[in-house]
Structure formats: C-alpha cells, structure tokens
Length: 271
Image (cartoon, rainbow, N blue to C red):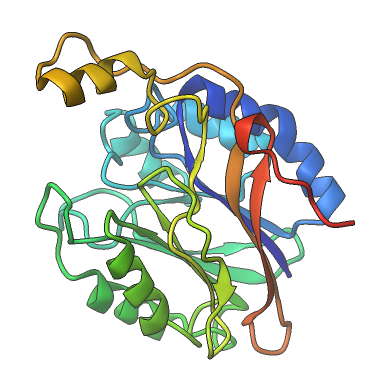
C-alpha cells in the first residue's frame, strides 16, 4: 500500500497548494491513503470545519490536528461529526473527538491513524504519550484488525520524536513527527521495519519564519516586544511530507521517501 503523509498545512498558501497539487500527486503516484496534519490550516491557528472540507475534497483520507486542535471553535463539534478527523490521544480527557481511528483506504484496506502530543518543551502538561499510543496500538494491532498503522507524534523535541519511533518500531507502518514546521533529513526505516521521520515539515511558504510573515517574529526576537499579530506568509507553498510503501504481508515499510513538492524546497522525484 502506498501512503502519503503531509506535514502541518499553514494558512491559505498551504490550503491552496493542497487543492492544486494533491489530486495529481495521488494519480501520478498511485496513492492508496493520504493523511494531512491540518492544525494550522485556518489562519495559522487551528482548523475550521469549512477548511477541513477543502482538504478532504483535495484528496485527504484523514486529517490529524495537534495542540491547536480547538482554536477554531466549530472543530469542537465538527470532529464529532466526521470520523476522518483525529485529535491528540493525550489531550484533555473531556475533549471531543477521538485520538485514534480506523479508516478504510480507497483500496479497501483498514488503516489505524493515531496522534499524540509530546511533553518536552510544550506549553501544556499533556499526559504520557508513550503509554497512550501503546494502548491504542494494542487495541488495533497491525495485521490483526488493521493493515497499516500511522502515528502522528506532534511534539517539539527531536529527541522525544526519535524515542517514539524506536518505542513503536515493528508495531507501526509509519511514525512521523509534526509541529515544528521544519522538515528533518532523517527519513529512514528503523531496524524492525517502521518508517520514521522526526518532522515532516509544513505545507506552507518557506520564505517565512515557520510559516508566518517574517517581520513580526523577527521584531519579537530582536526587541522582546509585540507589535502586531502573527500573519501566515502568503507566497508559494511547498508540500512537505513523507511517502512510504508497505509490505502487504506485514504492514511494515519496505520503502520510504521524503517529499518536497513546489515552492522554495522543490525536490526532484526519481523516475
């Protein structure tokens, strides 16, 4: 099965790139399942129900969220209505929605998509992501009740993301980090067969400070003072993520490729 995961969609530029490019990528690459992290797709802060529909119409089979999951208030109800939305497992206990869902791919196979928030350097004291993901994968073991497992680990620290990859090695098809908006160069298949990348990067304008127009973030770094609100950069976006192909017998990864399409980080695909 060919699976594509795209990192944090950043504002209008990211949504536009998804809408314009993803349908052709799905056809050209023969993709069976697509997951998009959409938690910054609405003005850089959260995801609205309307913008979730835009991503689904472009070809997403599942959308994951993150620490900004409910910045847009309508997501409180939308994530209950649409089973293709996955919020963090270790979010507040009373949060709506679910942190792990089994979704049917277009080829009929079942895929578990789970997400958790990291603890290191995060602003809120989220509960243990390792035990949360362990429990979810025990309920839906790969090649037991599902054909593939995708884990989105939304975290700040690279060390924590690498540790999570090794913790789940052999139990997931893909463990990929999100949240920092900067793609890491460590895409690999771990010893027991799980594909891993510490951060998928963002689908946004890289002529920016992690997706925001440069002036205000730079002012805050230089002066320590706030003047304006952050505004998403509006230039041409790069689609950043990771593509894997799984083994039908095991669900583990047999190939992995870092993806950068369009914009400033354009990557040539092998023929």
